[in-house]
Length: 57
Image 1: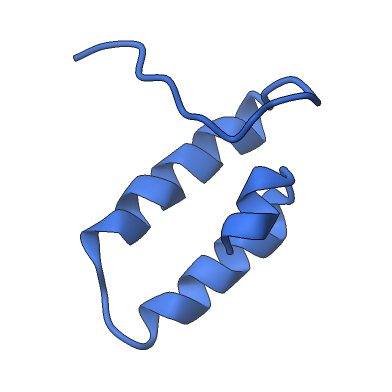
Image 2: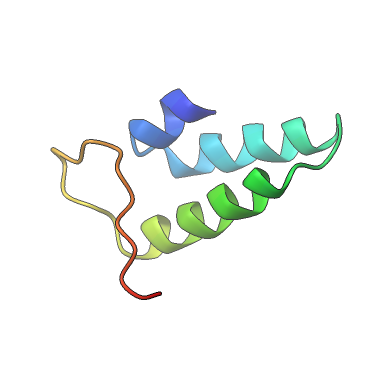
């Protein structure tokens, strides 16, 4: 999932995240799901290094 996330392959990342959730839910899945939704709507630049920067507290 992380490789797809870092390569901006949002649909595959979310599919694998959903698959991971079938083995048990972890709070980090919600974090990545929210980030994927945000990036799918507003993609980062092509040279994005995979780092998420919070915009508020």
